[in-house]
Image (cartoon, rainbow, N blue to C red):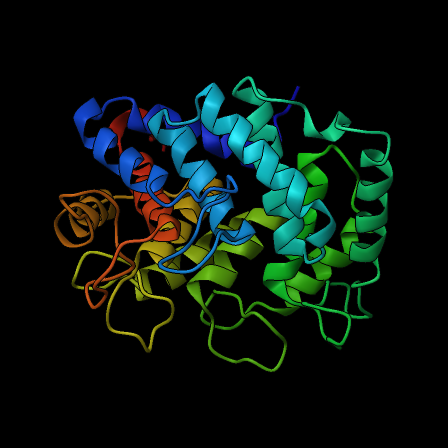
Length: 316
């Protein structure tokens, strides 16, 4: 049986990191655990716990062996406390992916926590359906008039994660190809003219899920991703930004994995970019060379880059 996209990706990343010495992951795991608050959730660089950062922390802990029974139970308590505050597509995806990770780590099954769990999920999926727009995509929120490439990816991948069928997938495919530009990449919303690395990766992943990858798309995206490779070894968010960042480097590499494009020299330059420029010796990774502080989000992206560029994880 075909695995959900995000679970298959997690397994691929985990396989890539298995060849790395354990002591490297110990300090990064401790950094992540140091961001956990008393309520069981994780914070960003400051403040209280947040479902967004909890999602990244849980994914990173899954890669570094940090999801033990005690940690999973604490996360489960936090997720239950946040269930009625979960409304946006990104919050729903984070909640579901964290709940699955907790369950796989031996924690409680939050989908069966009580009799209202299924009704709650059904209601949220109905709310997601109300974000569908005439252009075929999904808007960022109820007030949005246009479909968003990234929000459409979030909603499609959330359906996939729980084995639900997204309505009218052919309209989503058409929507996404209308977001492609002459440079080969994709934009976030229709009025934009300059492609971005992250919307391109989101479009590629969505098209892969919907079975709409073809040879012209592969060639177009390959050309675009060459244009955003930077001298510092990373990938930038678009062609106007002269430096790489962990997020764009991770999403670009994953898009190449989705399209089975050979990484070539990028495999080595991206690893050097992360290990020599973004890693803190005390644990954690920063966003880019200009950044001064690590956080759990960019730690996940950096770990993802290391996993995707490891020989054991690369099948291209």
